[in-house]
Image (cartoon, helix red, strand yellow):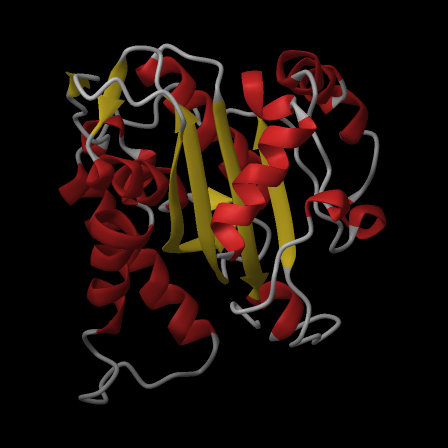
Length: 248
């Protein structure tokens, strides 16, 4: 991916009414069940803004989850014919389990959600604040292979401001889940709208999907861009101003 190239605001889908768009996705969820896995293939389905989770997702502890995952991953390795007695491989099931729970999928656990403190906007800064080029690593929920990208986050204060590092932490929290990029974009934006008590939030994500580049079509040059424009960011002049900041 060429991170240095300019983003084109006219080439990105604008979500003019996020609530209606999200409701449409939720309403179509049942329709998707009429298709088989083979018919869906590698298509990028997005069935709702919430990460699909079972009600009993946290009935067992993280330690119990790691123990179960290690056993199951050991079975996968054995089925593939790998020799788990080899010094290089024998610790892999435990390492994978720890990585899943403590690192790359830690955003599934609400206990890991960043604690955010807001501050009075004492400087009376009433223009947009942009935190750009937030690097993140996520994983595609369809093949469990990496999504590597950058997020650009902007908001206009309604009287409160948030610490800059917390913008990064919110992006990382939602990225550390099995994801689709559309959901990730919306989850970050809706979280910021809730925390900051303002509709004036924008999120743009530019990412490369290894499920596209390393398998399937094997296209190593394409990238995916998604966006969320809320409140004042639905005004074309504000969108252009945002892109001027990002491309500066």
